[in-house]
Image (tube, rainbow, N blue to C red; front, top):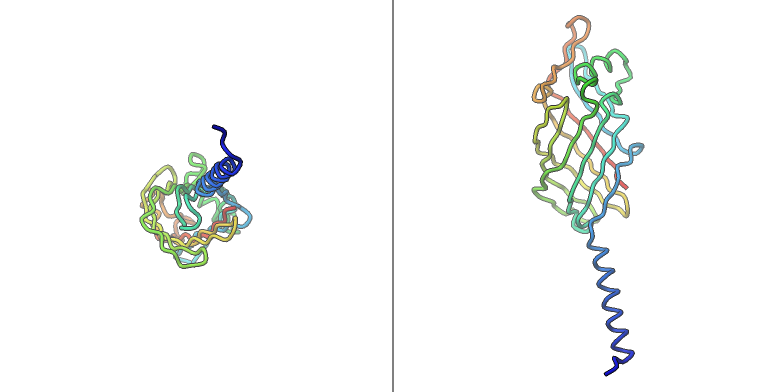
Length: 194
């Protein structure tokens, strides 16, 4: 018995639909765009407040489903000696405190997404945990951020307070110890992936 033309077309259409659906469901990887991303560390000292900005970062984010903001994987890496304050003496003290000769990068690797809340129009709030590694010391930290998905562009934005001493980093000192840096710092980020 020969299959008729209509039956053949129906099977072909179902196969095409199946392939298309599989491609849509498949996880999508986006790469960090360094030029459009920003990461700033804010701190205090006995003299004045300070900030330092990362000029070189890289990473990826993989979404299981862009419609639901479901993150499968996210990693970010910052080159320590790309942290710049505009003051070379402060930068040198920062690199020394972060042991940049031994530890070239600071990294964050997402380990778990606790909750993703939709805010509508591709905007989400994500409560996550991840491993932050500074100067060779890895700590699991909670991290909450906003996730904005528009076309092929993803923006992660948020801020996180940490203590330098939690990562065995001695807060930098200057002028023979007369200027001391506070232990608490705030990391503010707006990370763009495409």
